Amino acid sequence: MMAANARRYMIHFGSAMLLYMATLFGSVFLLNAGEFGPALRGLIAILPVLPGLGALWAVMVFYRSLDEFKQRILAEAMIIAALLTGFGTFAYGFLEGALDLPAIPMIWVFPVMIGLWGLVGCFQKYVVYR
Image (cartoon, rainbow, N blue to C red; front, side):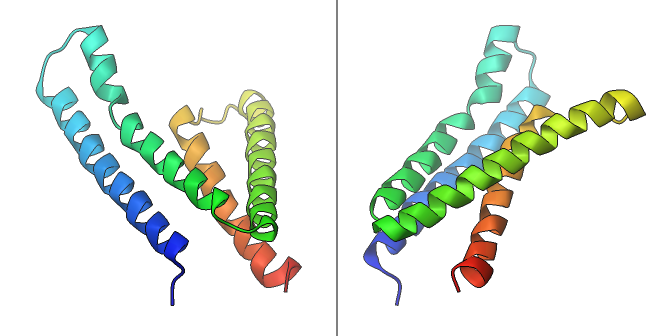
């Protein structure tokens, strides 16, 4: 049975992600369909960030609802993920210049960090804190 705080998190986070996807598809459609000035194009392009902030809020509310040990595990996983992402982009920057590798768009940095957070969390759960 899922705890009440986890159920509330799933509802809030899931709702934010559905709104994010709708806003993302809507903004891409508008940008491809119309001619807008730079200020309006920028505003339309950044609209999906708003529901993304709702998702971040849901994560923080869930984090604060956890006991101290679970908070420690999640925080440690995020720190490791942030360090791996930062160091990985740092190392890639050197390789990019030396080996003429393609530039990686900034939009991929946050998803990589969140993905690493999940992987590190799984590693912690099944290997470290077993």
